Length: 451
Image 1: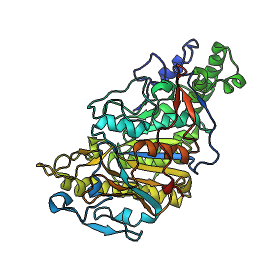
Image 2 (image 1 turned 180 degrees about the vertical axis):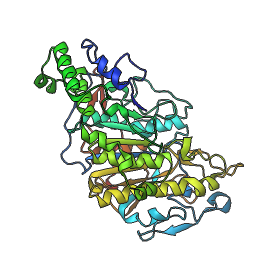
Image 3 (image 1 turned 90 degrees about the vertical axis):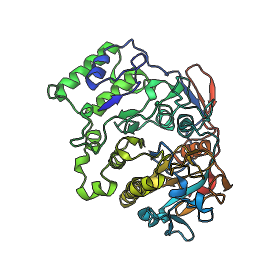
Image 4 (image 1 turned 45 degrees about the vertical axis):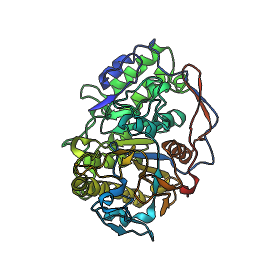
């Protein structure tokens, strides 16, 4: 099912489409976060990304078994896998990722992401917000209203969509404690639309984006006219209302309910069996395909969460190598390569930024359960499209994959690079709803990865 998550102040439970329309008559209800504002301008010199697809690999995929095979490490650290050559001379990746090996000329791999946080939730907060968590290595860290916003919420706030589509969709449901997946101090009006059901579920649909059988178009128009009267504003005034106001959000709800573009984007059954098979018959794979459809329909930001349920866990403390070769590597290889091919064939890759990253890597040492444990010291991630250089490897790890050997970067630098590629000045100032200033990004743009 689809959920409006934390959209209205004081309404923290799931709000259905019908409830949304009913709540529309409550004109006195204030939106949380309407006082948040920014100082500075959207950059004209940023990247070419008109949209962003973030593959959120929560759990921490092992860099040693994906993009950074440790050939020179001792056998007890190196692991079982061999590497294969790619289309980029001198660059080799895991033997169980042959499709991505054939596409290496289309993307960038960063092999030198590093930070000091080995806690899932606290490290994930850093990845999603570009800020170190106040207490690193915190297990089960929970979101707070004072958190820094998720990158998608900030982009929604700074560059709202021109089309009647959601500004930020999060598919696969919120993961873990929900940390890093909220709008934080921007207020709940900028939280993502969360799709709780997976696109591989038989009969997948999003009924909240279609009219009920008992509500005709004319009846919906009548409701909107009545709502305008109750709010004491006409449609022209509503269009000029402050972004994030309750009436502006009501307008978006009505527009999205009647938008063929939005309704068609969720119709994943329109894809051919061959295309669906290329992405893989598992939740994350089909959710990535849905993300491509949503992006093509004009949704600016889509995040896809990889979870243990149905996808095969990324948190490989046990049986790392069998999990990697049996599920993890082939699945990521299939859906990421299918996404890149799809975007390229549709002429969309250069204007769609694709990020695939977990919150950390895995330990160089293999534990007694044939697994690898949490390790923020070094990890790898993939970037493509949207102003990113094609066929490039940034940084390197040391001989055992423990720490960067060259060109280290942090999650905050990735955050700044995402903003730059999406045309946002990373050095601008944003204010929370208490009028306190915050620099948009604490990191710096990773210039060498830019096209």
